[in-house]
Length: 214
Figure 1 (cartoon, rainbow, N blue to C red):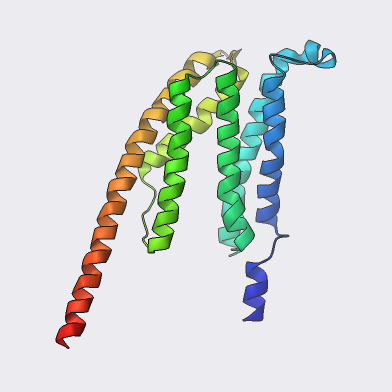
Figure 2 (figure 1 turned 45 degrees about the vertical axis):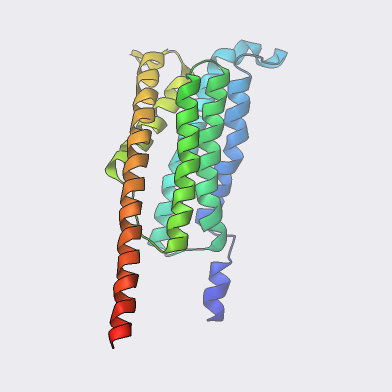
């Protein structure tokens, strides 16, 4: 028992290190995007490449999100610190990137509002699901939304033609797709959760009636 508790409270393990690394990459992404418009003198010759820096740092940070979860599942490493910090790190990375792109005029404000509020809404719903002990799986629509958003965001960071691709046009189209999918997936998740809660309430009522007749 003591060993289990110690593992639950462990901080220094590989998944948590990857999560912390992802957190540390957020200011790099923010500063790189900020300096694309207002660079210090020593960065002026490299302004064109700052979007590329933000893009690839964001991509690496996003890959660590997959890796820390994969390693945690494979090695059965579940800690209080990791369970708390991992989803927070994801939200911080995505929201920071969206806000910087909004400031650069590369994303429409309505799109940013939809995506940011959706993240807050879904986080609240998942907390409610945990409190109610209801298991609501992530829908395929939600996964497609995440994919579209995570592909669009780095494209909008470069915001230039790259390898023969018009990244501003492709990135803008994908971020609109992500916004639409985010609304649809949030609605589906909400309806699924309501259904699960009703089932749970009905089961409790049946259980009470059974006990009363016993």
